[in-house]
Image (cartoon, rainbow, N blue to C red):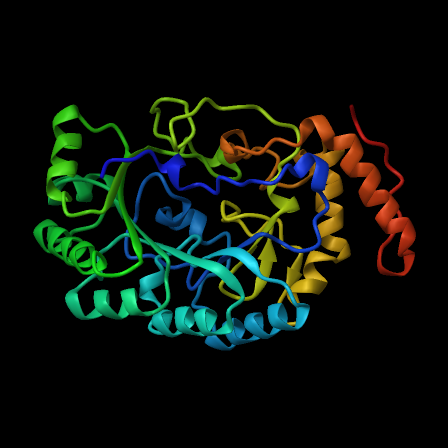
Length: 349
């Protein structure tokens, strides 16, 4: 079934402008690994020089177990945990176990992941479908081996990739797991788009997306000169304050916690679940400072947020309520001065 990716979004979104700050995050990005087996030219992980600007590695499964304990002791349940960020999650040898731990912990209503599909095969596909995932996104990057070499700098057997993805789709039909096979349009011809739909006709859901930008976009035009829209094809909207710090967090492979899944630089780190509980991070002063930075129109103070193109693609917009949220955060700080420090700056309007 051909769909637009926007159809998978949460339909019952809360009004952040009226609700922020909320007592607990609605969603998390959990990064099994920052490493990848592709070198896509539209992704910072594909750039060897940029990868050196951040730490890289595999998440210790003990961190996943600790996260479950943190959330259960907090007494909240998340709407969604996305098990991916900068790298390819299936490269982690214990990825299936990670999903199983999260599912058994019951800390999230849904578990989603995305994969480039290179490691999909019948045995792994069945384990993936049985693990507890609710949604699997498969990102296709070209419709031939030659195309993959051009776009991802990766040599592969294209027919083997199609067979692995097709097997996953066929097996998913007897489960409750949704599978979306999508392609990022890096300048494909109409014939190539038709070939994508033909090659992956077994997909329960399929979609063509636009390329999207990243944090610190001054490093490169990640959209490769394609049409300036959101990855869902909607119009870009300039914003002063990013809404993400007010409803989600991203846990990097090494346990550090940042504001969003597009911060490949790790420049928005506001906590570390190796040393803190998730609740302590969410209610902590470092996250408060970053929220205030956005509300006060100072996101240029942070090298990831300052020139982030992804902010223009986000569906939520809290700009009209910046003053109200700022005041609520100030009142919250004043009511509990022992856990925070004063911020005397005024909000820019």
